[in-house]
Length: 159
Length: 424
Image (cartoon, rainbow over all chains, first blue to last red; front, side, top):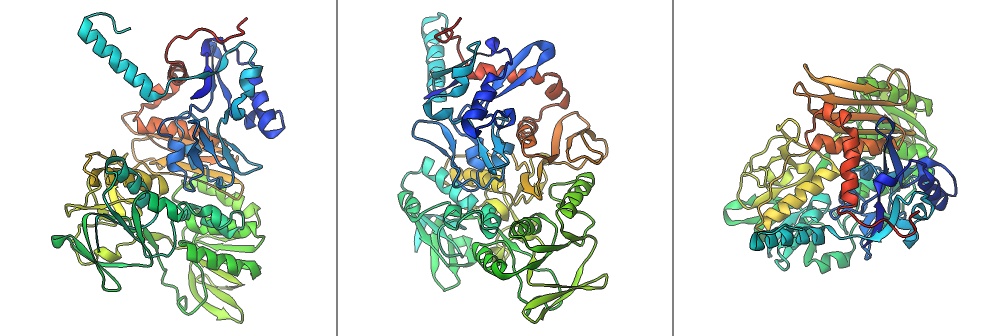
């Protein structure tokens, strides 16, 4: 599936992504509304954009008591507003802290990749964000296992 | 009647069990017995239905074709009365017999009716089943005033739903604190202020000694003296495991049905999951009943896998809860009350509307956390939740905070990739 990929070493914490996301989804420039958030560790000069990775067995979807969080045919994990009651169990379940909440609407939200045209990627000046095809977990594991098997068979390097 | 898999109950635990049985056994017949009528609904959503924010349709979490697609026969309005594990059979209230190979007891909780004089004859509402919620919503449409007995989880959710319907509210709680399931004494005080600020008449440390009909309404008599007249009476004195069908002593039980790490009871082939099950607490290891949705889903999955012949062990139930009430968000994970020898890390208490506490055991491991504040603090509680699940030392969690970011970065970009197009 296509997903937002973060090139962390290029992020400058300019937070244009947060503004673009907030404006696209909520018609307002409020970082708190953004579904992508830059975590900063200024002393280490380490900046990390955090955004939903659409987990394979997504904890948010597992705990959702109203079946409002579903995996779509294209692979993304999506919050369905008509079923969300705003209980915030998904926020408490997400290991990455990337599930968000809009108090005015009383609804949870995650990255919906702007229906295929992610605004954060468009407005990221240092190109720390990209919208790319990523390997699914199963594919990556299979490749890893195959590489190990190849190494065992040939005695060469796994790569 | 007979089926390979017989499940009793039609909520979180049973539905999760169905999903995981079907992961490992695509065709074994499943019979689901439920004492309520209709398809599964979300109990968590009931207060939002009562408040009028959500329709009945939107809180149903399965439709009939979902059961058909999964090969599940739904037996509604049927109550299991006795189990006969020796011959792997059970009896229903209407006399029918059901034979099973594997049985899951996911009968949930039932409401505790407090010993209040006159309650039985007096019109009142609980908020536990869909039927309760429909009744309460109907009554709330004409009522102007409400009294809620019980300041715990369900009582406060009912109160919040009625507040959204702009009713005059009185909450009577016999303890000195609201929401003991989610808040310590300090958090309780902050929350209490928020509830009073919302205009609620809050009576803590007060018991109801009697209730009685008074014209079209209800008169509530308090133990400390005085009466309150109201239109709508809500009784929320808590819930307990629904052990009705295991009354004859064939299955070992404590507060709930005792299960091992495979969710199997003392009787081989009989499993229990959800509110009715008593399994190891993740933090203490002590058998505990955690009547919460996430635990029911986890336990249901584990039970389902084991019933279908796939041995999977449960690491224990980590209590977690979150709720927004009276414009304050409360959240809790694990053991959030400190014991002797524990260290606590507190941020933002002292009269403010933000309060977070992390409890660290004498070995330095994070064992629980509690939060009170606005909605967005819950996301960070999620990160803390998973650190507790990893049994992470607090020092590591704080000092290497950036490592979380680093490992996350590695996950997003697993292998080195060329820079994106358009790179300057």
